[in-house]
Every structure is written in C-alpha cells, then in structure tokens.
Amino acid sequence: MYALRHNSDHVSVRITGVDLKKEVAGKFWVESFYQVPPPEDESYVRAINRICRRESIEVVIPQTTRETAKLSKTYEDVDAKVIVSNASAIERANDKYALVMLCEEIGIPAPKSRLVKSANELQSAARELGYPQNPVVVKPPVSFGSRGFRVLREESSWDTQRFLSQKPNATEISLEELSSILTRDEKANFPELMLSEFLPGDEYSVDAFVGKKVFIAIPRLRKEIVNGISFRTGLEYRKDIMENSTKLAQALGLRFAFGFQFKLDSEGIPKILECNPRVQGTMAASIFSGINVIWLAVREVLGLPVEKLPRPLKKSEFYRYWGGLAVTGKKAVEI
Image (tube, one colour):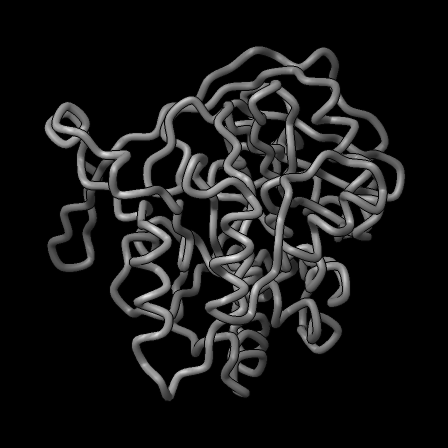
C-alpha cells in the first residue's frame, strides 16, 4: 500500500483490500474491503470479478503463494489486469527442489539437496549431507511461509549456556525426533521432503522486476529475521547476486515484481534458497533505495512504458517494529 501511494508518477490511487477473514487490521487502511473465499474455492475468481466490477478495479496484485498459484492459471478470466507470471513459471518457481535443479542446470550455485519419499530415504539423505556432524535443513519442496521447515541438529548441540541464553526455537529438531513424528501415524503417507545442506552465512532477499525493456534486481541483506520476516534489512550491492537473479528469472520466465532469497555458504558464496514469484512482504524497503518495483509492475501490466531506472541506487535501511490498531466503532487509530 505504501508503494502504491508513494509512486514515482504522483498518481492518486484507490485501494480495495480482500482477506479470508472479516476482521483484519488491513481493512482500516484501504478505501474498501471485502471478505473472499480461499483461492482453492471454485467461487474465488467469481468473487474477485464481482469486486473488480463493483469497485472499477484496474489492477489485481496477489500477495500470497496460494493466490498467485490460482491466478496464474485464471488471470485471463479476471476482469482486470493481474500482476502474475504464467502458470508454468509460477509452478517451477514455487517448487524449491525444482528450483535447485534448475540452478544446477544453468550454472547458478545451489545447496546440495536430496528429495526423499520414505523414512529410510530421510535417514540416508541426512547422513549424506553431513548429519549429525553438520546441521541439515528439511522442508517440503512446495510450502507456504515456514510451514514444514526444520533444521536437523543432534540434541547434544544444546548445552546449559545455550539453554539459558536463547529463546525456544521451534525450527530445531533431531533426525530421530522427526522420523518418529513422520512415521507415528501408520495410516498417513510419508510426505515428500527436501533435505539441503545448512548454509551458515548471511541471508539476502532480492526485490526484482522484469518488463519488456527493463530488468532490475536489488539485493537486501537480511540483518535481523524473526519468524521468517525481515525486521532489519538494507541495500547491499552484490554483483554476483544481481547477475544470478537476472539469469534465474529469465530461465523461469518470470514477469513483473517478484523476489529471490539467497544465503551464503561457509566460503561466502551465495546459494539460492527459494523464489517468491509475487510481491514480497518487505519489498517496499527498496523504494528508499530509489526503485519502486511494485509500481513498475503496475505500469508494466497497464502497458505504460518502463524504459529506464535511476542510478545509482541509494544506501538505505529498513526497520520493522510491532504496532497495533485501537478500534472504536468504525474509527481506527494506529498505536
């Protein structure tokens, strides 16, 4: 919303918001608000179209993986322009294991990874990747947020000092514990999982834009991360990450505004973590570096020329903090 309202063309915009829930904070920050069914519901697109017609919507901006997956297949049925890549690009981008395999194919550094479909394969792959001497990352190849993400560590990695100084971390689990959880229900099928080498270095988000004439990739160093969300991030010009983002976006066939995440290995080499083929949660941070990729996507989807970008990018940092809304009747006050 900040990116739309603080656009470089100084155009006044009217924003309509939607959510699965009726009572959400965002409804107080938009001009109109509607509750909609889940994207998987057969009535979802019809609901979006009713809103588009009622509110004279010109552009739809999906912000979740589920919305993006749905609208990538149905955007031609929507009564507005949709900022989304085609279905094949979205499907490949959302599959973390397919993304790693693509990176290996086109020569972009990627973490050593294995795809497992049984408890025996889980045990074998974890040990191939260095467990228990080294931690190993496990996650579903297709997931939403951090669901299913764990770091495999031996229980002995905890000591008294760490126990007393660190808050509980729900992401850490031993291989034995994970195996027990996944095999406890004999009636349930073993889930397909991706195991990867643990990358110990700094993590980067990339805010990217692809248009007919322009491509931009803005790396942000994620200096503080809480539950997968950047709470402190800043522009860091890294040519290797920018070049790899360009190459990977072209291979995937992505358009408009989207993002990548990279993490440094023990030798300082950035390796791909995942792609977010949609507007990212902290993407507005790049506005203060001189590029509003969300607004560029709006211009592109409306057929307005995006031919050049300001240079050089400005050094900037973004801090996130907890806030709240106090609501009395229809009046909301941010506190």
